[in-house]
Length: 208
Image 1 (cartoon, rainbow, N blue to C red):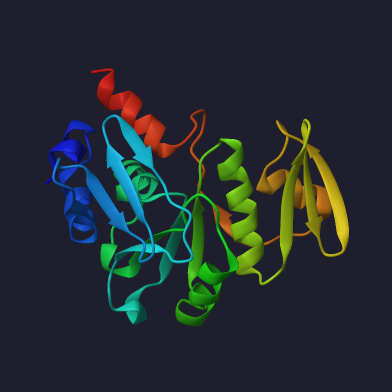
Image 2 (cartoon, rainbow, N blue to C red):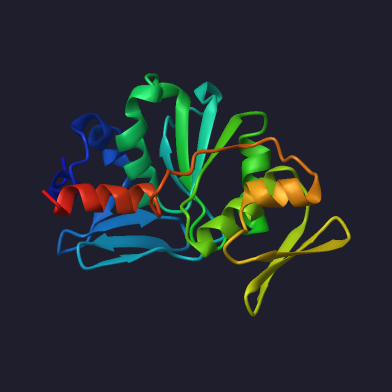
């Protein structure tokens, strides 16, 4: 049990699940190791890295893993599992990984090599960088190149030799699938009416 996670209200069984997969700095802040970078969380800050690797949490025997949750941060993974723990009663079959703030091809080459054929589920929030990361991740899992850029109040997406233009507010994986008429076939688990599971967790804990 970690005092920060307890203060956030994270249920004990979820803390037990994630306990082997983080460290602490000298002040007791949480450190999540990506191999070439570190996600760092304290009550006054949360820094999520850009990395070519992934942070992982779950069964180290990947042969037993059937569901892979790809998240925007380690703290988002913890918050998600806190709220959705009852939906996944077999923790030995699941693996969480974070791709950080900018998903990139190196991460998905590893996923394709090691975790091919699993049931992928995306856990990203509602802010624009998360929505972009969600689409980039869905395309990468389908082994399709995709490029996103911002032009004034619009998102430009280069995909399958076409350029798609969407407003910032309308942009999402689901909206892009409708516009492009391409289904990536990956399930998304975005929270409803909040920016992220982590923001929901913070709001619930600090309002008590």
